Image 1 (cartoon, rainbow, N blue to C red):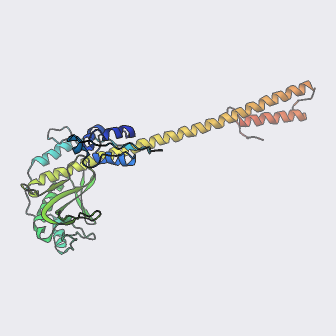
Image 2: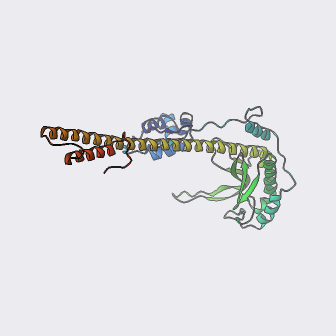
Image 3: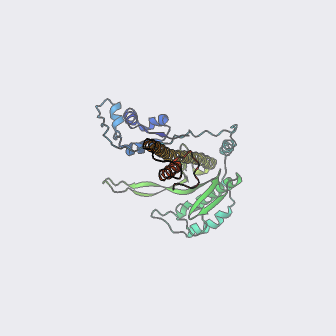
Length: 351
């Protein structure tokens, strides 16, 4: 899909007519992307509480669009909506994802070979500031970041997910503390971690909140995939154990989405390179034409001057035969003109 250019005035009008979340459908990008475009183009945005005040009938003030000389050209990469996987889909990847999602995945008691290697490492691993395990980066180890008390629960969950991915044709590898699944041609990072909650709110500006573990497990995917779910966490009524098939299917959908996005980026870069080659060739031909035109004009002027010299010589009865001094000069001048003329084959160059 071809990129489009943001129109600064239109964007300013739109962001003051409705919230960014409602503009996603028009621009076919996320509200985060719209906000970034506004910052790059110096388009002011409504402040916090603006839409609530407006809905309540309060008087609100719209910030004017400031002058911005030499505003940059900001491209907008539109994204297609992520298709919903169905088992009867004509796309075999979507059908496979839907099949995985529809089949409940029970926690397996057997340990995957990667889990056998990781279990001991994680039990001996150091912990972060919140008491969660930190997988070693110098040994093959699955990315599980939980308190030691939750390891016995997290290890079988990760083992079950790894088994399911491999059984669907997606190999797993570990790399510097990360776990990656090679899904539909893409390496997608994922992890199981223990979630955090705010322990203490720091009201002073610039001070970070203080967090603590909350005892909930989270299956998380680390990848940019617009429109895809990438997080499944324990809740009031559900636990990660009941969502394992969703986790695996979600990771597959993310891999497919990342690949499609990457292919689109590659096509755009190839198109830009093609256009760049065309522009370079056009420039080369233009410069060549200018050179030829200059030479052709130069040759034409020399020949016209030679003709004028011959007229003067004839009027003054001056010899212009090839062996006469003037004739020799005329011959040289005409050869010189031929050297400039792009229409005349020139083997020797100008004398």
